[in-house]
Image (cartoon, rainbow, N blue to C red):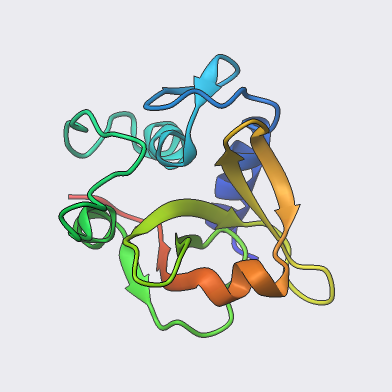
Amino acid sequence: MTPFQQSILAEARDWVGTPYVHQSARKGAGSDCLGLIRGIWIALYGQEPEPVPAYSMDWSEPQGEERLWEAALRHLDPKPLAEPAPADVVLFRMRSGGVAKHLGIIGEIGSYPTFIHAYSRFGVIESPLSLPWRRRIVARFTFPEETL
């Protein structure tokens, strides 16, 4: 694992225990899954790449728009949907036919893979990347090592 990947994982794990708060990105105070990614971005680069508009719990589900995926494509480096690597950002589609609207960071790979994410009622946790979760992954990204 590279030093850059190690720094991403260290920052992500530093968020573990942060309570779940919709639309928040404050380590230790409250975060949702996007807030975790935003917080890691700020730790890496100093500021967010664009303002984040208010969003509902159903995201863009009624319109069927992949807004989260589109935002990820604007700021993260897409990777083939092969086996994720540590520190990758993964995007999940939580139900068939729905928009992709959950994010996480790959923690461990191998026999006992994990991912770090903010989950309603649990806050930021490191969970097993079980088969049901792996089946929901629709995109994989890495944080860019350099930003414009």
